[in-house]
Length: 136
Image 1 (cartoon, helix red, strand yellow):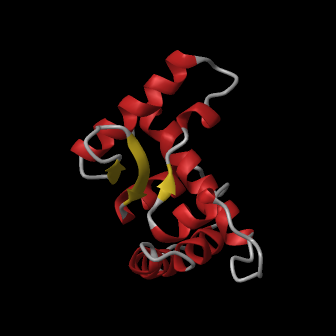
Image 2 (cartoon, rainbow, N blue to C red; image 1 turned 90 degrees about the vertical axis):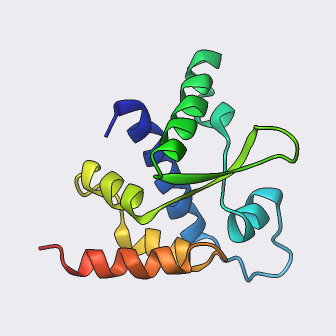
């Protein structure tokens, strides 16, 4: 996996792990991040992920998302009439490759839990759980 792709993919996994820890059924908890994560995909926030590294780092993440979409590793959801990415949905291959590259730093159970809490990730969670069951 290309290093720039890995940097983006590892941030996407981190977002899923964070989402797994949130009780989305709690009354009164709502935000655009939570709602977007649950319904649309992972909110694409390269300015947040690269805050300490400047605008060139943000553009690297934007380009990485476009490259990864061309390779079929994720799907970008864009603003109407613009090519600005608002959400991304990784495929199971990207999730597996990233987990393998993180060498045990990723919590597969938390990732599956986070995916199951979304409208778009239940099938991904099932595929990931199947794959994880084959690991030593």
